[in-house]
Length: 102
Picture (tube, one colour):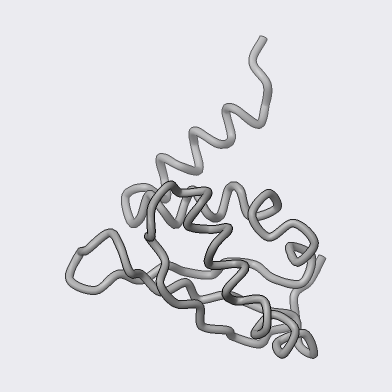
């Protein structure tokens, strides 16, 4: 019997990897990457210029009222994301304020 999360991870990675494998990795592991900030943030999209797979931009949805806190933590988040992926895939984080529903 297989664990449901392993089946879900494979399915989501397969669907998202058509667009962006790094985006899928960040999305599926956001709770591990952002730890205490995962409740007030959610990765929306990763954009790369010229189909290059490094120096990308992560567009991050942030709960209204917490954008200043997350702005101060961007260097830490960049470090965590790039350490998790294994190389400097993300160079910049852009914040978009939204109302996140739990």
